[in-house]
Image (cartoon, rainbow, N blue to C red; front, side, top):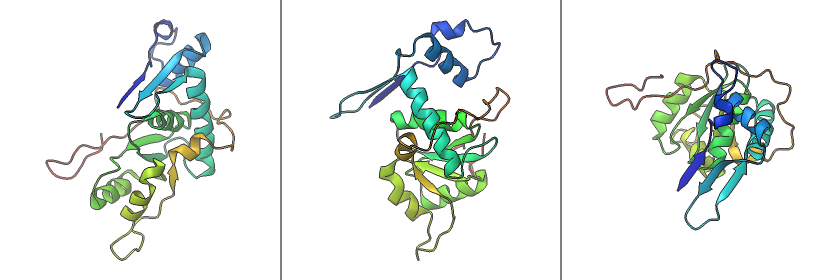
Length: 195
C-alpha cells in the first residue's frame, strides 16, 4: 500500500507568504493547475485512486462542511481520527484543518483502555474513522457489559466526503498560529503524553 501527496509544489514555494500553511500551499497549487495530480493511492488488488488538487479540495471542503452538522469542527475543537492509510485519511486531515479544528490521530487498533484514555485526555468532540472500523470503535467505547464508557459521535470519513450538506466556504481560514494536530507518545515510559 502506498500513498503520495505533493504538498509543496515548486509554484507554491515561491509564494509571497513568509510561512504558508499546508492549506495555503494546496490552494496555491489548485489555483495554478487544478487538474494536477495531488494524490495517488495504490492498494494491492484494487485499482489506483488518483485525485487532482481540485478534487481533493472539493472533497475536503464538503467533508469540513459536514463536520459542522455532526457537531465537530471549529477553532480549537479536537477531532479524533482513527483511519487507515488511504485517500480518506488525507481528505479527513484537510477537512479538519479547513474547519480550524485540531486533528488527534489515534491508532484504530489501539486497546480499549488506551483509546478511551486518549479520547478523554484530548477532549475530543467527535471521532472520525473508516466505515470498516466503526463496529470495533463503537465496541471500544463501551465496557464489557455494553454500557457506554464515553459518549462521542462516531462518524465514517467516507460519509463526510460524500455528504450533500454543503462545503465549508464560509469558515474563516485557519492561520499559522492555529493548533493543527495533537499527537500522543507511545507511553512506553508511563502514560502517553500529548505533543
